[in-house]
Each structure stands twice: as structure tokens, then as C-alpha cells.
Image (cartoon, rainbow, N blue to C red; front, side, top):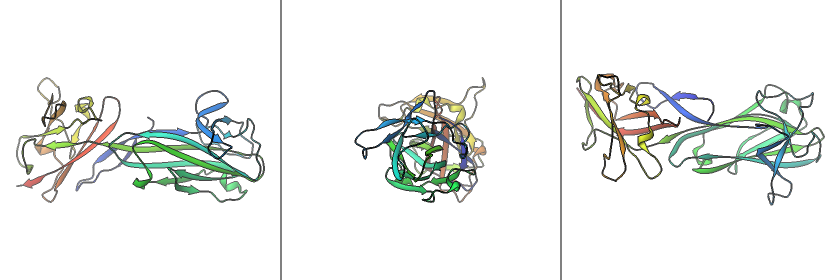
Length: 288
């Protein structure tokens, strides 16, 4: 999945919210073709794998990438705009998606996400477009993203040869899941002064298996799952809400909750055994 990005969670007490990451780049893998990045010469009727080309002496390079082009060399199609594309997939129930991208392009790039403009370099034969620092663009506009396949498009304008571009992009997101604090009760009253434990269920759905969540990674409002005498987390697999799907029920120490009397909700964070980061929210009522 790639690098781990840390951002602030919404709470009266700041906590750490980790996000899953998808890394996209030019020239990844081996060989002289880049199957992850394709180009079209006929307005999208057909697509071909991009060519990996040698870096021209005038270009700077983003670490880990290689330059790609629509011909086997860093030449071709002057005064023409060539369209390239790559894709990534977001799971059903994703939330907090964002895209950050660094790019060099000779001569100029325009970047689209699912048809939405993300960034555009100076449309000129200007070294600022292909020399360091690499130009950076980002978006966290949620309407630009979608569950399932997403398409990132680069329109590369070539005025004069040479021609090519390199980029490195990271898509961050979380999976939003259903949770139920104190199952069977409403409102979810929490007495922060008690010495007890608060149960919280992570609920399975048709697209999410809660039993794949690692209890040792789960926190509720900053409080980790309580540990039993033998050092195992207080967690059980059971059908909490009677929908026929197995859920994960965990218990956290009440006194460890990072909540204030004014809080009306608590945020759960966790990670699956496969490395997917999840988040869920439920209402609470704090009492003395």
C-alpha cells in the first residue's frame, strides 16, 4: 500500500488517525514499458502501455520514478497533447480520501481525477515544469473520488522535443465502518470516573469483515483495548446485532478514554490484519 500518513482526528482531545495509502508512479516495475500508465493517440478509442524513456540531461527526476513517453525515445509529436491514464481502486465505505502528486513534465501537464481538474502547469516551454522542485498538487475534495475504480489522467503538452514526464502520487483514505458503543443501550452513557470498562462492537457488513480487525490496534477515543490476565486483549467474536454476521466486540478502560463532558461522540480507530485502517463513530453522553 505504501507510506503511512498521519493526520489529526476530530475530537476535543487530539489523537492520531492513520490512513491507508495507495502509491502511484511513473516508470515503476521492470522493462521498457509501463503497464500501470497508458496513453492514447486516438482520443481514447485504444490505449497502449507507456514507454519508459531515458532521462534527458535537462530534466530533474523524482526519486523512485522513471520518465515515460508515448514513443520509445524522449521525442515525438511536437505541438501535440497526449493523454495518459492510470487507475486506482477505493473500497466501498471509504472516507477521508485525498490525493497528493509531485510531477515534472516536458513541456506541460494538466492533471484530472475522474474528470475533475486537479492541477495544471504553466502551458509553455518553461524549465519550471521539469526542473526541481517538482511541482505539487493536491486535493481532498470528496466529490472527486468514488468507490471502485478511479481514473487519474495526465494531458501532456509537447511544444518541441524532448518530451516526457515523471510523477509520484499518494492516495490516502480510511475505511468507515459501523460501531456500536455499549451494544443494546441508548443513550450510550459513560461515567469517566468509574473504574469499569466500556464495550464497543465493530460491526461486519456485506463488504466488511470485522473479525479481520486486530484488537491490539483498536482505540476508542484514545483508549486501547483492555488486556486480560494472560496478556490477551479483551475481545470476542460474536453476532452482536443479530444480522447473521460475526462482529468484533472489544472492551476499553473507561478511565483511559480521552473525552470531556462536552463531547457527544467518540471515534474508534483500528487496523485489519491486512493493513487496512478503519474508523467509526458513535454517540456518547458523558456524566460525572
